[in-house]
Amino acid sequence: MWSALAVGALALIWWRIFDGGVGLGDVALLAVIAAFTGWWSWAAAWGGVTLGFVLAASAAGVARWRARVPVEYVPLGPWLLVGCWAAVVLAVIS
Image 1 (spheres, rainbow, N blue to C red):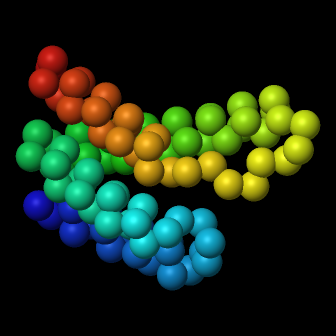
Image 2: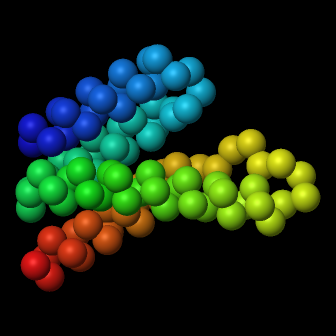
């Protein structure tokens, strides 16, 4: 559960400092993902969150590269959930 507190606090600080980067829904989802994956290990919690951010950044890059009109917003939540799923699968396998 400490992973949820740590990730949630960092996400809340990020939301507060960089206005418009993430929403409060993303902050809450990050805390839930960290609590869920934190049952396996800290590595699973941080790996799931990091993988979600990497996937979201990759999706934003591809969307921006392929679009003729610049893409200003890519939802973060679905990519965080994919990262969480991958972290859980990797934690269960290993």
